[in-house]
Length: 369
Image 1 (spheres, rainbow, N blue to C red):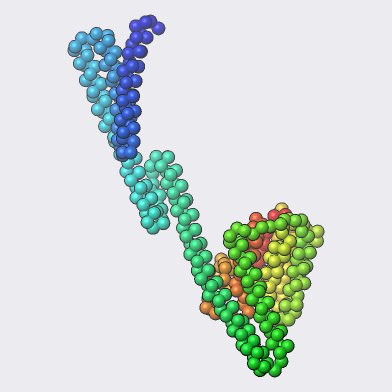
Image 2: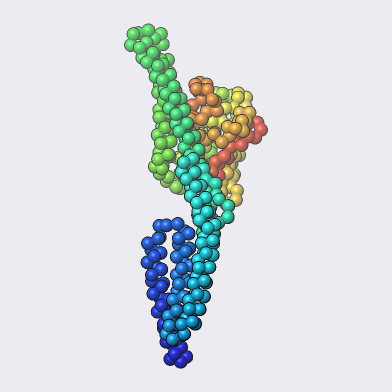
């Protein structure tokens, strides 16, 4: 390249750079303004840089006045037309951003977000994220309402379940103090039984509070599944026999699972006691366990007759006892056993589910081996 060409390049670059620096300053001042103004600044800087370079070079080339005027007119016409097109191009973006702002306001006020259609790819991605956040918030809100309802039911039902044995204990204590008890030993046995029942209820509440607080500490060991199931069935055997219920077990031998032995035993025991409680006399409860697809499957099948489909999702909720009555039937428990089962299973990174299956319900626990 010749020296004149380098000079032209230097002059054009200098003038264009001056316009670019000025445009950066204006853009910084308008950074909080509408996108329309940003598009206008971009168009002005782009066209202005070209115009400045052309004008500066034309003056350095000592063009005639007529030729210089023609150059200015051409640059002015091109600049104005480019600015108009820039504003027209920015208009849909501005409208879509306003729609997005209105949808975001609706999300803040009503918790519901409807994504506007169309728009630039970046804003569409923002809209999609807001929509996903709206869905998560809706689910969290519904879950919070459900938990709050469960907590209120729990307080009401536990208060009732504690008030009844406490009243009985008080009556028996007064009878013993006044010497009105015709068989003091029988009173003592009843009092011990009531105290044991309240102790179990308090233990369940403490376990549930640890689960909800994330304070459940697991001591993982290699556990033989048939031993855990066998011990749980032995512990529930007396209760089942008293109710005339048959316990059947089918456990694949030699299956080892990595779990906390005490907590896993509690899971099996709670499922068995729940099944026994809801199985009528002369019915049966079947327990099966096996290795399947890199996990162990533990199933408990009772003969309760099934659960309404509308209530299946509530089975593992705190204080849900299968009855909408304020005061459930006697012996129904505090409605904590299955909630504890879910908490322990999830702490082991497993899942628990329930489904209707003849002649009753089948609870299925899956734990990683």
